[in-house]
Image (cartoon, rainbow, N blue to C red; front, top):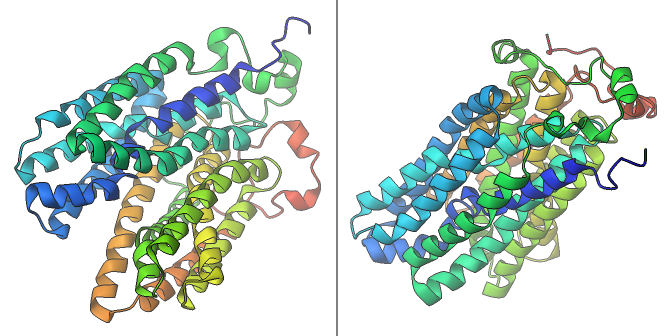
Amino acid sequence: MSDQPKVFYGWVVVATAALGLFLGAFPIVAFSFGVFFPSFVREFHASRAEVSLAFTIHNFLSGIFAVVVGRIADRSGARYVILPGLLVVATLLLSAEAIGSRLSELYLFYIALGVVGSATTSVPYALVVSRWFDRRRGVALGGMMVGLGLGAVVMPVVAQRLIASFGWRNAFAIVGCATLTIPLPIVGAFLKDAPAQIGLLPDGASPDETALSRRGSGSDGIAWHDARQSGTFWLLIAVFVLLAASVHACVIHLPQLFADRGASAENAAMASSVVGLALLVGRIGCGYFLDRYFGGRVALAICLGAALGIALLWTGGAGGLALAGAFLVGLGMGAEVDILAFLMSRYFGLKSLGATMGFAFAAFVIAGGLGPLVMGLVFDRTGSYRVPLAAFGGAAIIAAMLVTRLGPYRFEAPPDAARRPAWRRAERPSEGCE
């Protein structure tokens, strides 16, 4: 026992993954797109729709290639995806200096980032962290996702200051330099695909504990071909497509929604800050509850919370109730990727987690891109956000109803989780996990 390290190396992996996500593609490319938006409109003399198309193209390609990234990570290891991904993303960001005055060059830039950016997202990192943790997988995934949450909050502010001081091309290049010099060497040095590589076991367990928990532990899993034929898989996809479209639509349009209701610029900015705070709370808190309660019930609470938040936004006004609604919607946005990765690992194991998570992430990203588009189109037709808010509130409720159809995990955590009170676990037979 004295030879055991005081800190399980898996937490080093979690911290490394969080850093990789913080300085990966999505914080600067996707979460900061709105900050670059005015510069693009001026630089390319383009309409808002023409500039928005770059973001749509990026999200669509990121979703498609997330499946490819997941499959490669399953077969070759996540490091063989993440390290080249960070290198190429950094190089592309540095190449922003070469973008000319034609809009087609901006499209090409975002096309390239969409193709390779998925290699630096939560898809390969979630596979690594899930291999390192079983009993504390929820907390570990939540800790990993804090990096992405911080990136969503911090990077737009950093990007705005860099644009103001150096211009938008240099802003991309500076972040690319940071990606090249900070996460790339750290991930290369500290990220290990599995605990067995350094003679450890998941959760830092002893060999005796691992033997006792081997049955149903999720250390193996089912093949991608079988996973995608499961009713549970498509049920989960439906839930998170509905939830992603709903919360992203609200979050993207939130500042304009508050402004339309007479809120000052400061109050509109406060709404965005509330969403950022909720996003971080969702990242951290969700993992804690996933390790202690049945994940379907955690997802149910998140879906119902998002529906309530949308209802509070629907009621009108820009005061305390609307800010509470913004917090609940942000909470849903912060928790959904954590829950998605966790549930995929519990229902289908680790054998094809890269593929299942990649497909789910693709659906999540594409739905998250379509939701704001639908919100904007309906607003243009009706002159109000009330109709789309009502529709997305209904979508969140449908997602909650679908969650109740989930049965117990196929790949349960080790025995200490089995000693929880019965009301904390699923009690009905599985209805879709063949």
